[in-house]
Length: 587
Image (tube, rainbow, N blue to C red; front, side, top):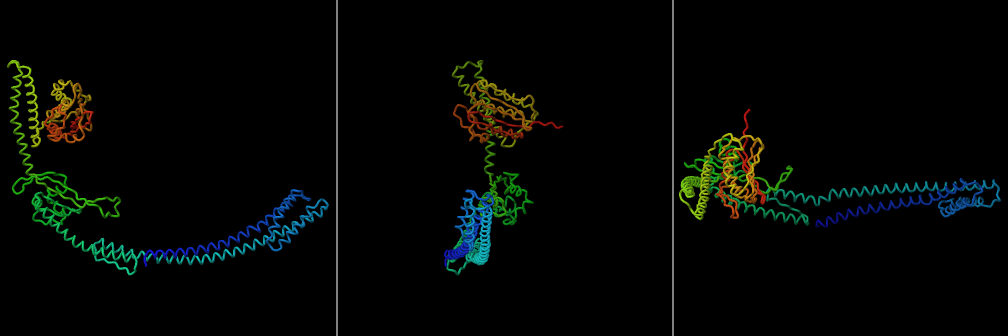
């Protein structure tokens, strides 16, 4: 039988049981209700009529007036139409006879009226007595019906409860037992036990499920066997690729166990004679400082070692291996969509690039040094040409001389920056630290750009507090950075505008700021301003430099434990900042 039909029969049976109990309950409740209605309706009304008539006799003197007669008669008529008990008719007739005497015209004596009233009250007591006995009798009968109904309903309810309890205990087993077997089978499959099978003898949907389940396990077993071979093949291929890499590579799992390491990494770490795969990395980092630094990834980014009798340079890069979190733990308060299963460390061999970089630096230093002498000679010759004592030159010649002079100045500045850059790249920055007044540094820089500002009519304004702490810096190189800021500000400022130089103290630092009110710098270029050779695209009106000034400025400031940055917005101008530690006197 199908599960659907089993459910229909089971719930249909429950419906019939509940319906039968409801019908029995309604029948007895209706019977009790009828008994109660009889008590409340007929006998209670007769008692009410008798009470009203006695009230008329109690509240009025004899002979009765017309209103009293009318009230008494109306209640008596109602009582005459509500006779339900044996003997009640005779008592009501006697009451009518006595009332007729009470309402006769004034021909009776007072004694006769009192006698009639006495008989009327006696008949009223008889009516009340009969109805009270009837109420007691009917109440006993109703109570007996209630007791009978209670017993029968209790029996029926007990039977219904036993049936429902038996049904609730036994019927769910028809559904729950096969489901439990199915769940147990699925759990076994999740543990990769593909030999699990389900067998249901009944001809229902569960038999179809067991058949599909068994077919699924057969397919999974076939897939597991074929997939395992594919995975092993792919693993061998990946291992071969890793082994053939020229860069050193190390892989760890989430337990810090070594998953793979190629020959290059073993040679670099001097671990070639040891079995590494499957071992915990802490076993080797305790005695191998280089391996420890690589794993901690805190102290080195690039390093130089002697490998095969030659100095080699390597750059460290690490990547965390993240996979979807398909089995979050129940005790986790927050479940994440992914989880880390390890980390890969890659040591790129950058020896060739390092050698090229050193060759480039040496070339720049050599060519820059060689260019300075002829450029200086050209400038000297230009100065002589401009001297009237040598001989006059016409306006066109003078204009050409000015152009040559501008280009020579620019070329000399570029060669000087290249020399400074080569000094920075070789790590040979020569710093001459002296205790300096920040305002003196500003004045030194202002004198250098004063003529350039006057040519464009730009006002140079200085804002500084009355007292500032001194700084322990290389005054010449710091002033050079400030001159670079001012030169850029003047270059990109319009004529008749202003450039503001501001000094302030903040968090034991002296902050130098140069603000112009030019076009500003687009956000996409701001992060690259301090990169070497980077130049902000211009509209052709402003001559761009070599792209080295800000890069060298950054190296000079950072070499003095300072910080350099920029703030800018299109249409609002730009502000270049650097901060240097203030000099703290030792108490």
